[in-house]
Length: 351
Ligand SMILES: [Zn+2]
Image (cartoon, rainbow, N blue to C red):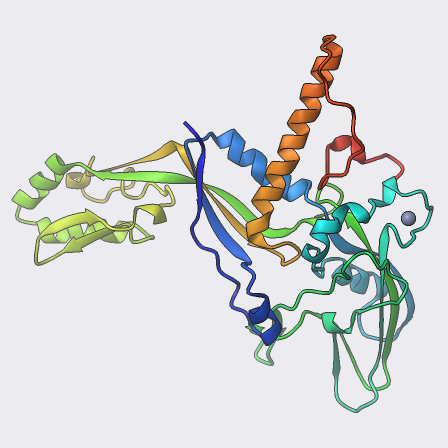
């Protein structure tokens, strides 16, 4: 039976400004897989986390920093600032992994140069944000230049609460006469080297529940004098609102099966003996949901096709090696790695 999958919730993370809305790119999606195995969906998840290449700022040269944050903290914040890597996805082969490039310290085949040069010339605080990361002129011309991702950011108000507001990601803040002058270098890498190259901020694999009511037990409760209280109490056991009790119809129904988180409150932790065996909860063994929250470096809906391409290439590599090892003559000629990430052999010790 073929694997089916459907995208259930493609939605942007509430576009907060005009450029976000214009891009109209889904940042979060839920993808439901049917007729497959846990290991297959888990492989897709792990490849997305560790093998999809993106661009991240990887080397920072601080020329002047009189802000309150030290150099290391600013470098860390720059590294985790998402860079749109989608724009060059079609030409991703054109940008070399640093360990594949002939140069020693970075050239226009393997790095993209940025700079920040901001000075606070007023008496007010000046936020330095991702919008202040500028591309330098010596970048390779054959790659659409990646730019920092416009997104929401956390800000702290005077009461100490963190609030999500519109605007770019803050890097630091400058007081009067303070200055930040930095040159930095973006490189292609993968999540197996460092988390800053991961294209997702969160990706979870969920099992799909089957929630059933035992109608014999339900009828026994309905026949008893305390059915209203018992069923109303049973509904409140579920923190996710899976069940609904209608006073008028006097019935109990499963209304939100997918919301079940397998907490077992409705099966194992029952306050009244009459509720025993009223509900059963099982996990489907051939259906799973992959919930993806992308950083913006790559569109969320492109991650799965890219991951499958990498898995296909890994399997093809194994197939070719096995054929060669067993003397088969049909192995495809070994190709230079030009895919989205390839296997472990790409990570060399010296890098
Ligand atoms: Zn190079």
